[in-house]
Length: 499
Image 1 (cartoon, rainbow, N blue to C red):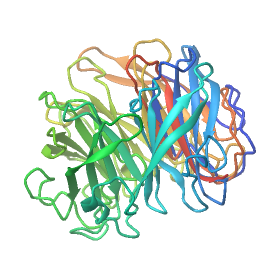
Image 2 (image 1 turned 90 degrees about the vertical axis):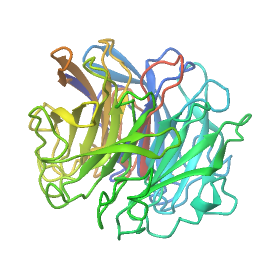
Image 3 (image 1 turned 45 degrees about the vertical axis):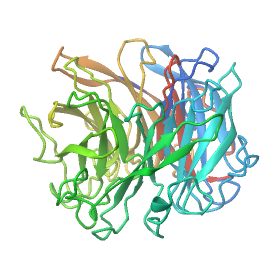
């Protein structure tokens, strides 16, 4: 329906701080609503995993407070940066180091410590850890700092179950994807999914997704249930409560890239939330074309049922999905609300190497689902199908987050990362806020209406801190939702940041 672009040279309020090339602004995006964001419509988090604060490619995350001044635009009202030198990470001894690519994965969590603000999980692929950050806002203008945190890793001091720490091995890309699956078991705390797409259990580079159950404790003393640990991989497929035999093959990269796992509202009507899992280099449709799994969940995080969607598979009602070799469909996934009122949620799936608009310009597919997990209709967001100004190597679709309605039309919006965007410098990255509109009633679909671009070097009110080339702003994006909060708070990683 519409879009807004935030970049170094756009004019929607973002003002970058010391931008450089290749910072990868927009590599990932997430959002959440908070009651203490000072009257803004919301906040988004955007990754810059090549940001150089603190060292070359240490990484960073921007928190942007958004509003929508018109029905076809978004604006940035306030900017916060989390990095080795900013936002309180050093004070809680969680500063990323050079080469960590911190921010490559983002996941929003509800308020766990009772201060009214949501929390944030941030992954660092290169050194394989995930930081759980407890955020605090200023209560007025949407500025955030880290007040406490903990590191999830293979270290003996980690709060993760020992059986899971023992599964961590080098070169598995553990931590490149982290997702909040919601409260599956009804105990008041969310379940987390952490992916290792290069895990070799049962198949070389088949990948694995680990599901953990959190236990809420006073203040920031969050722990995980030691006996509630589910592994989805080639090594466990075919067992009760796991993926079906033959689902994962060698080289599939189960769990996708940054954002390759997402919560999905209840698909099959059993009252339990479900999940989306990307299979980035699945070969069913064509070599490395990719696929996505719609996974129906049990309350303990085990698998009740599943449906694969790719070219010629998992499609019904005449739906089409035109994938070609090396599209990487499923590199990023995001659950969407029920768009058309049929009682079944929808899904957004990135294909960052799609060639509409040029080599690896990227695309996002919207899948309109049935209760069986099949796609009854599809819609493609790309340079060929919309006015989005995507060009070669933009990698649009690597980060995706669904936004609660920020423009007041009663419909969900999308934040999509484009971490290879060169506006203002090589690889600085960008995030697009894409506004959608309905097509048809019950059983209908959605289409593009407008957009706003937020570039890694400024725009739409966004003021970046020490932006650099190759920071990959937007590689990770997560949307966070808190009861009673407003829409539109996103966290965006910049794993190449050099702070």
